[in-house]
Amino acid sequence: MKPDTHALLVIDVQNDFCEGGALAVPEGSAIVAGINALMDDYAAVILTQDWHPADHSSFASQHEGRAPLEMIEMPYGPQVLWPDHCVQGSAGAEFHPELRTNRADLIIRKGFRPAIDSYSAFFENDHQTPTGLEGYLRNRGITHLTMVGLATDFCVNYSAQDAAKLGFAVELRRDLCRAIDLGGSLATALDDMAALGVMMSKG
Image (cartoon, rainbow, N blue to C red; front, side, top):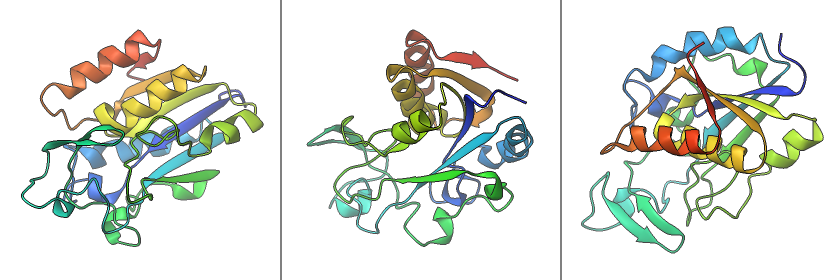
């Protein structure tokens, strides 16, 4: 059992990011059993959940003539346009049915503001608007985070980088993450996380 100062952060293990979903990450569901088993090692387990309104600005469907995975400039910076996914209240937004959600102390919903996307568990994509997770962790005396989930090169990456910048010790369990890997985005993400002191492990 890990000390009470350690928490497990499970990023976006939702139906739309698993096989058959609107934005399926290859082998997304393959990590669920391992994450479930890992939960017993932690006193604190936090889940994040992508939670978009149907007209979210990151959806390609909201930009005439644009296709999914194109890049555009938003007021807060570059933004990938995604297929409609994890729409509030939809089956795709639900957690994977085998994920042990009953072990969660907290569920952080993100991406619910229509005008801005949110990859990180800590901040919206403007890197300024907080989700409230940092305050929760500080209040519980948590200093170390183990991160797992989907996708390695987007929401996991942004969450790990922000956690490291905020002063948390961060471990990424690469065996319990899966990536989208858009044009080399996985290699870039791994390099960026390592540069900030994120520890990589495979169990």
